[in-house]
Image (cartoon, rainbow, N blue to C red):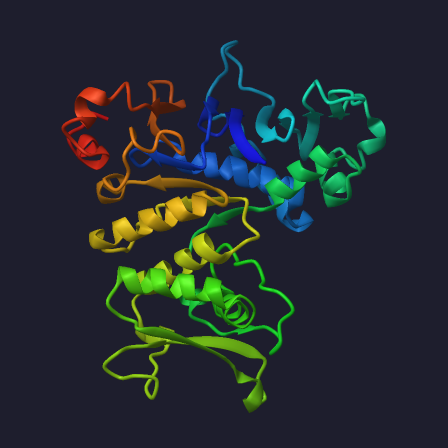
Length: 380
């Protein structure tokens, strides 16, 4: 299943936007252009479908800030906002659309799942909140949350599983350095937390259960920076503890003197966490990374770009960036089947727009300049 369309109306600065993501989608644009609001809209829907109920209810104090900031075409402020998705499934296009009304509490006023209309023996509208009252447990909760992974209809189940696998990744280097609880003999590799706070447990389980993936992460880090030469992951159960930890092995000092993560730079920790997410976390269906280049040396951009491409072969990746050096690593013409680039900007009314860049449209500049250089010269 692949997400092929995102439509958002009247959410924050996103008055009316549509995007057609590919396996790898880059969004470029200045600060304040609304790139983060796209992630916030997708995160809002992911929490509503598969997140913790307490996290969902935590949106209620923010109700007034969820709606479009200005006036609608009729001169009034909108009363509802909508988020709609399209997915490629085995037999066509499936749609999932939602509508919300902040009205003292966050009310779900519309929710529909539409299946490909040529599925034999199936009515195309699988879920219609207005029609199917039996599926409505609460006016404040999405029905897809209840149907979830146990839904009897396969496409509905796959939509839920896809949205549940969205990951909004923003590494907290301080927390990513910490030890984390995990059994000494883990049964599975846990999903990597959005802030990488369980990086130590993730790496330990990966090392124990999927050594090839662990080696791929380590190789990616080693290709990016001269140090470390290795990574030591261990469990402190022998000392009466319950946590996994990791340390770096540097060539000058060897395994006899491993370096704790507290002695490594934030950039190194961030790079390790991002490589772990992109190359080894199989629970992710859509990886959303906001400025993954932040804190990384420009020379590392080619390695980050390679990891983004490799990840996009297995799952979708959505990235925002300001870095011309990262943009320079991509070729719109050669990668047009798998790569989509959008330029984010705000118009005079404050509305965010996502303008698609195509190789044909920018051919006169891209024949002379890489994508990042075109941005530097303000052709884009």
